[in-house]
Image (cartoon, rainbow, N blue to C red; front, side, top):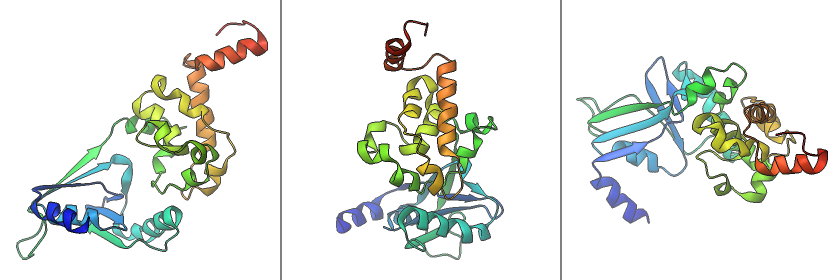
Length: 226
């Protein structure tokens, strides 16, 4: 696999990566990984395209002293991941390697919907460590693919209805025991189980509650309306 992938990297014209953090003051894209594939994607091709969500912005380079160890410890239990790189742009005239051109695409995709709501915007603090997934009893039993969304687990259930539509994803907020384990392990202190409750409240208020819930209510209380 290593030899096969290396050939693809060396012959590719365009490399696409994500970014763990965007550094506002110095203008850099910070990428942390254990495999090194992102580094190959960013340096071998002549064009490096970084696609990064707008919520990934941190003030300055020195803030990585906090965020990189926080991400690695919460995500994989490491003190720091193996490869940590900050890209500040294409190669300079005096540099022997690197891409000739670098493009950074700032991704919204509904994130401003959360940003505009003071009671929900804390979800944008997520650093994608996955700690909430590891402790969630629902995620442990059904797995990530069952969510059928880009982001799974508790944080996915919180943000997906706002990124992709409440009507289509309202059921995710009900796929939780509300045990609070996700909130207790979150390294950036997102009150996840409370945000799930707010999503449920909004879903019911807009009439998006699931058919199964309506049937259960009728069975328990009688036909008192929807």
